[in-house]
Image 1 (cartoon, rainbow, N blue to C red):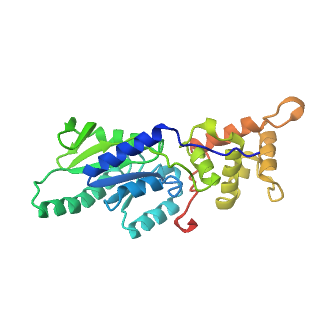
Image 2: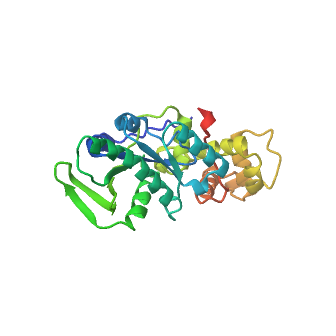
Image 3: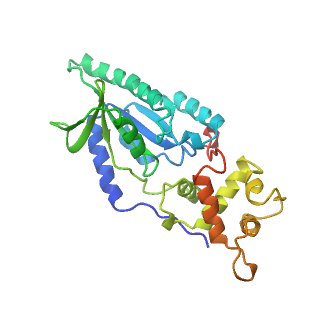
Length: 287
């Protein structure tokens, strides 16, 4: 029996209220998405909160995604009026390009304020995203080259720390927010695969089978070449493929019974370490 994934802890409602309050004083929003699954890692709740504010999309972990699909996503978001940058928040790749897009979006927002007679000031930027999508890594990467924390801003927010990135940008971090529900369990499994959900709330073997299904659909032969020594896979179900992979890898229990749990964990670990090569689970044309 499949395990239905429930994933909206109670503290998320509080996080949503915090973000809604902070957005009142923000000029530009940076939404961090997982480049491997931009649809599923986007939070519709955040979209409603953002409203008409300028949004710059940070497609994080782009080094783990298919480069051709990455380019298609950048084009897709550009056509939607949401400039996007491919980044790797861990090593800093693409951060400079991202901040250039942020400054461009912010300059237009500040021009509107100045037309109303307000004094010039740095662009106020908020970085948002679901938990474990790489938001904190991005903030840390930006802050490394930033000046000191500016502290609370009178009349703006209390208890929040603003970071002066440079003379033109102030940065405010936010808590990660999960949507209260997912459109389907496949999206939940994909998020689990990519580390956005705790391993304890989904079935490891189901996640492994979803990964196999995605590989067979999008990258035929990659799973078999690594785990089955190139054997013919055409007549086997996902369950049979997983069991056969366990046999091939020598993961057997008593009486030669395949150790499905251990094989599932091996596949997930290989994927998360990038050993299966660059993989994209979603393309703009999927929805």
